[in-house]
Length: 242
Image (cartoon, rainbow, N blue to C red; front, side, top):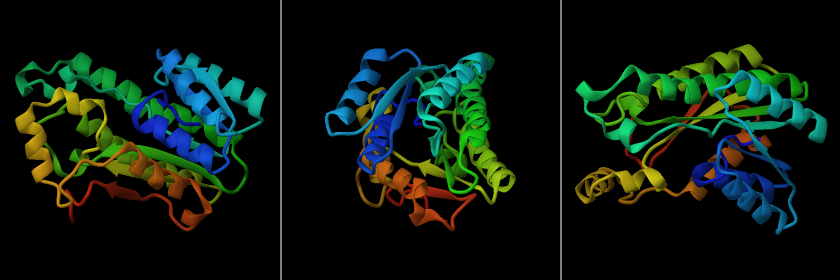
């Protein structure tokens, strides 16, 4: 299952996992046509995809999604928590203009949604070999002047990853991709000056692509990462270096 996989990074991960032979649950909240497009692209290459509408921040909706997955697929081996909430308003608002509602919306989707899906997926995974992959963001490590109501929640996702890795071991591994500047829809929210500023701060001098992120997700979902759990892997072209 790849949550939030009707577009962008989630869609790229869904396609990449399908190419490796996974039957993929393409989840969306309100993007039926786009989700069906992702599923059809998978099926056209001989893969199997099931489109399921669910709001990951809503308990009843998540329960319904996993009930359907259990009924139609019998279980789940891999969960990628890609669903996230961001908007120009949330990313660009000045400190004095940030509202509690902005915090609440991001918290409910990015953190509670990640928790709920992991909690429902774990019992459906095999006793050994289950994989959960979460997504955080580099400002959670370094701080930033943008996305003040966004990055702290992503830091919580990274902490949750470590908590789940300990809780679900040894049967299930849990890891996190910490993403830098990936070229998705959020780039459109930025001014040309800001885009240039971001790009010049990246040693590889370019934004990453969803397909490059998907390769890392496949690594975490595969036996290649069999001795890796509780880790956050930075995918950012060198922008953050410890």
